[in-house]
Amino acid sequence: MKALVYHGPGKKFWEEKPKPTLLEATDAVVKIYKTTICGTDLHILKGDVPEVTDGRILGHEGVGIIEEVGAAVTNFKKGDRVLISCISL
Ligand SMILES: [Zn+2]
Image (cartoon, rainbow, N blue to C red; front, side):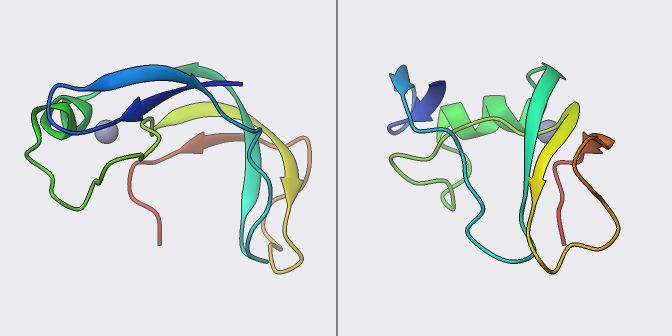
């Protein structure tokens, strides 16, 4: 799948990346149907967010349908329609 990858201030490229998979029992994989850019993305692309380092796949906030959940996920299941916030706990 294609991903927008950050490579430092002002440097971003569309790159081929593997489809996301569950890494932790608390993870979920969501098929995104709608998303958009936000102000945080613009700050990241300018280099204002040092926590975002070279190679980070950009993109946050969206709506979609859960494709898979980890063993510790109890509040959501495959097929649920969800909104992904930019802040996760
Ligand atoms: Zn945002």
